Image 1 (cartoon, rainbow, N blue to C red):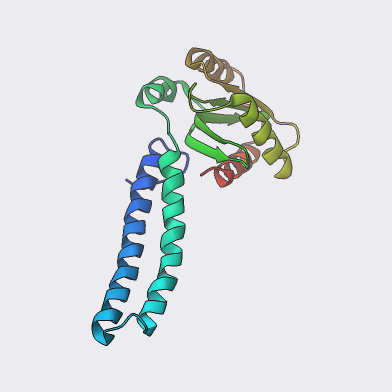
Image 2: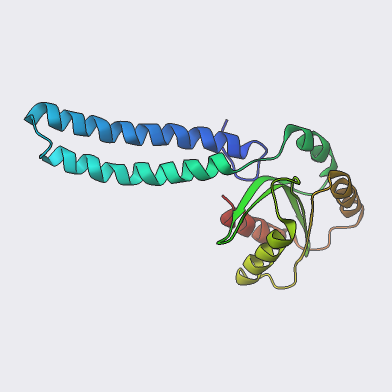
Amino acid sequence: MKAIKGNFGYLIAKRRQVLFRTILYFGIALALFITGYVTTGTRKNLLTVVAVLGCLPACKSMVQLIMLIRAKGCSDEAHRVLAPLEGRLIGMYDLYFTSYQKNFALSHMVVDGKVILGYGQKEDCDLKACQEHLQTMLKQGGFKDMTIKLSDDIEKYAQQLKNLNQVEQAGSAEKEDEVRVLLYEISL
């Protein structure tokens, strides 16, 4: 499965990709080190230097893997409930936002005009802090008067999605796409 940000199951697919990449990078660095040691009989050779430098991208990949392991995506149960309710709205799944103080896991989000609705499962997200963080990021991105409503109650969120689908589309599709792109850029 290809990992496309915003699709259901993105975090799981991305986790697999990064795990494979991390193992590959460390394997290459180890192979270079062993090759240099076997051919020269000592650690003091050029391939050891290349192997050590090869550990830099491997370690960067390891950090990304650790972040992806910590991130929790949308549960199958929530996906079954929310997917049929999207209607004309474009649903964004498995969003994991990071800030200096906290990390925020949102299972589902939609953008309609100047309204952003989001659902975070109870144990995964401090909704008030997440709302403030997203508001700050949107202002920095040039979106001033956006209304963000986050919920951890799936029935309430489902009703909000139904209500949003019943009203006519409020904003332009291009502006909504720009907001979605910004949200994807600031999420893991």
